[in-house]
Length: 398
Image (cartoon, rainbow, N blue to C red):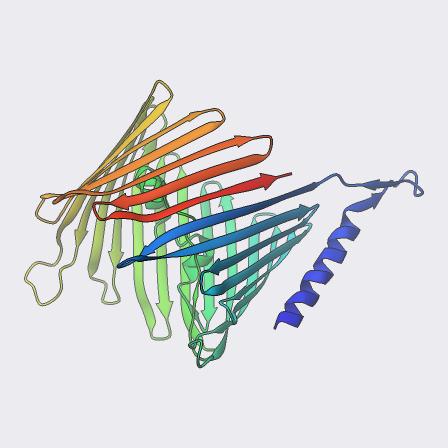
């Protein structure tokens, strides 16, 4: 596998170099070199306590490169025990066609994903081939999967998507892992608070033994004249598996939207239901989410109240204050999150504090400073037991 990946990357770089040079049609002797080039290199070091009196040190070296239509990214991770993982990600855009490949070692070969995507007018499609080690490090076991993707970009407010997986499930991980698109959009304030101190989540489909049909996902979205509606349906080898339906309305002035989301299981019974409200009147943003969930059978109640969340954001004197309050199925206090974010160029500061029913839960603090293409950052996460994680790093862009 390493040799195949190396040959592919070398071929991509040769093609990219060729594409970065073009000749003037009027004067064939003149050659112009495209100036498109960017790169970055970064290093992050993380300290993690290991009870009772030890600690672990991890480091991640990241490199990105973009030359014309070619992009390349590498991430290498080490710990005190030695090499942990290596990730290579490359892509080449040839007009409306994009070729990409992802290779991962952890520390032995773990994943190879080759993809071809194309877009013509309002139709886009692609094919993904995956070879993965689904066994253990001691006993490797390799399996192959494939995904066929076909979709239509929004036309008159209507868009569609189809994902078909062979030997692969969790197909929506390829498109951001979003089960309900409009709920995802309206819950952006909750998502902001959840991701404020967390790194980017790695989304990856699940490869199963054998190359058989495993999952089909069909999605249709309508966003026109204030109407928000979507239907996402899952099928497996036995037929209909589940469906999520969204319907709501959005207004421009003021920025107000409300939405109902219903999930049906294989028996066409309601498994979950959400009611979402999102409002923004500058400089105040407000969001509410009311959850209902089908309790474990056997129960006489088909669906019951499962929780309530309120989120509020206020921007004043250059500081963004955000709050998230959660209540459980008995409408008793469950969790409170308070976040503060401010940026006084070139310094950015973030603080996120959470409380539960017992009191203080955890605190996260992050700070960064950027100047002349250099970004320096540090962060710490701690609770009543002490520091849970501390990190610092830099990124150089040129």
